[in-house]
Image 1 (cartoon, each protein chain N blue to C red):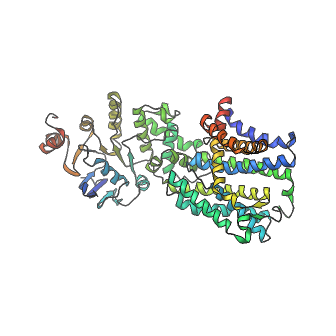
Image 2 (image 1 turned 90 degrees about the horizontal axis):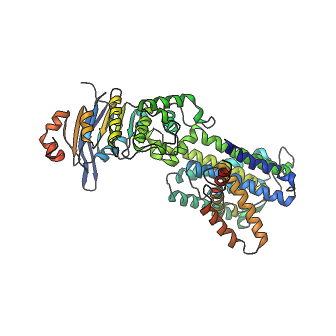
Amino acid sequence: MREAWLPLAVLAALGVAPLLGFGGSYELTLLARAMILGMAAVSLAFLVGGAGLVSLGHAAAVGVGAYAVAILDAHGVTDAARVVPAAIGAAAVFSMLTGAIAIRTSGVHFIMITLAFGQMAFFTASSLAAYGGDDGYTLYSRTEVAGTRLLENRLVFHYLCLGLLALTWAACAMLLASRFGRVLRAARENAQRVEAVGLAPYPFRLVGYTLAGAMGGLAGFLLANATEFVSPATLSWQRSGELLFMVILGGAGRLWGAILGALVFVLLETWLAQQMQHWKLVFGPLLVLAVIFLRGGLAGVVARRHG
Amino acid sequence: MADPLLRLDGLRKHFGGLAVTDGVSLDVLPGEIHAVIGPNGAGKTTLIHEITGIVAPDEGRIVFAGADITRLSLPRRVRAGLARTFQITSIVAGFTVLENVALAVQARSGSSFRFIWPASRERALNAAAMQALDEVGLADRAGQPAGVLSHGEKRALELAIALATRPRLLLLDEPLAGAGPEETERLVALLTRLKATYAILLVEHDMQAVFALADRISVLVYGRVIATGDVPSIRANAEVRAAYLGEDAA
């Protein structure tokens, strides 16, 4: 029973962080980035740990959401009531169309085909000359809420990210516990068993993939606003790999592990980069060691301590 | 004679030049156990795959409850009332025993595209699942992870899952494979009880069990049915003894 409190403790810590001396603009920018990537990672954990769909193209869904913000911005549309649904909708449609093909495969083939679709999105973004092409696109302003510049306030933005992160986590947990999620979880372990009780896994997987993409699109909306800048790098396979790494580092068996994984990943990466020039030489091996020695990921270790 | 529940009509399947199913016709009547026996390589597994929709036959028809199901997928055949168990036990090891069965109940009661309410708290699903577990004698194991069950218990769980789909016909693929003597005894007693309620097509190696359970037996050799009949006539059939039972079997 106590384990149910651990994700809430992580979210609460993020909630009080600005009040405990992490309220400077540098810290808030860093935390916002960690929470947004955490959202993307949670929706990916829903796919990987829940449905057994190991996608190496999840950043593409995030990027499609971010580009929706940029493209609307370029055409003078900055109202949240239009931008947010557009970002979510674009990512959902992208995921549904690519998923309809990708989910017909499984295992390594699924990984490779999601990677391929991600790269197609990446090169498409690179060729969008009207929206910055390779160089990316700088937003004129953050998205407006009911005509106000509310999101310019860093504290407001912090709590918006936190709220949406909590909402994403809760939505994924709810989905996995539902009838729908039960079919996904059973099909992850034994698809033949699901068929033999009279259900075809494909439509369930496709809906799950689309929902995860929609949540990725929401993270993309926040990401574009956090940096006020969108570039093809947002959709790159390296970013997809990082998201997958956050999921594994945190522990793919637990949704909230992805939040923990994203936090540790972003903070460690930033701290190491400040300590030395060739920080990646340390960062890489550290991640490898973490995967080898942390059974069940960070969340697994924490849960065992408190369980 | 009652109309057959399942009828195979001239099924043929070739893999390259090899006729694995070579004109098989047989039927299962309501309320009977029809056993299919045959030596290794006789084509029993392929025949089961054809009946369940995993392999499409080259020729022939499969009629179930009056409807042609030859081209239906496995999930749709299950929804039509044709449940199966697998030669190698197929359960969701990470689920509890109860959730394994509840999945089958939910598949036949309402849509599974429900996203909000936790499935484990649906009382109607759990009650129907408990009932199926009770039927196979696993009710006291409901809360355990399915992976920790003994081999015989997993076999019984698979039966409970099949029963929970509310089938009209059970297709049992070597339900006794790998079971010890005591487990076999329990499973045979269980199958004897189920026989009162369900038509069963039984593919099994254990001859003693087949002779104890079956109403009729079909003998499959090299993809052909060489004999169909009741237990005494199959025991007495010289061709069957030559092909399969050997000289010392009777």
